[in-house]
Picture 1 (cartoon, rainbow, N blue to C red):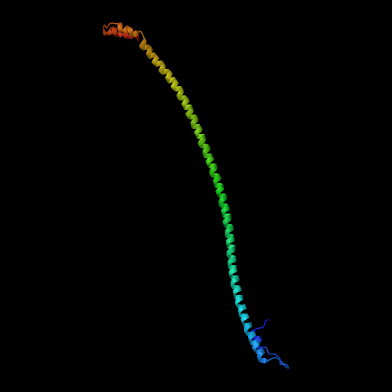
Picture 2 (cartoon, rainbow, N blue to C red):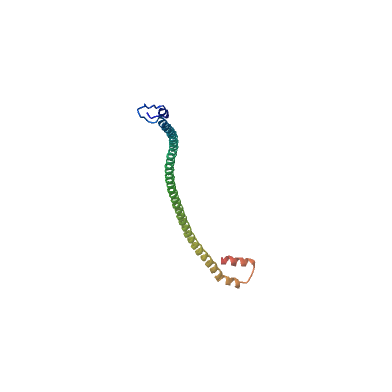
Length: 170
């Protein structure tokens, strides 16, 4: 067990022949007591400081641990967000490709329908043109018919004769 200042103070030495000077020994012991008390106080203060520093170290270790966990969680979350964004972008691309295919197919079908309609209209236009040409030619033949000359040469008689003549020509 370590010495206390009181142990040093109460220490009695036996007297011998030609021993040490008692006042000098007591003075030295008083000095040792003071120094020893000072060392004990400093030791106690240092012990308290060590305890405080250990508490702070524990606090900072907890903060460090919490920060490390937070960083790991943030990294995992970032990876998850990145993965979700990648999946979502792939889905968007697939949807866009489907829409593009659908739009292209609809456009092709519409183009085919329009092409068929154009061909049908061309046929109808040719038929119309042929009929119009035939009608115009028939009308032209009618106009160029020699029967008109006979009308100009005929004298007007009664209305009845005129009617007979017109009916005869038609």
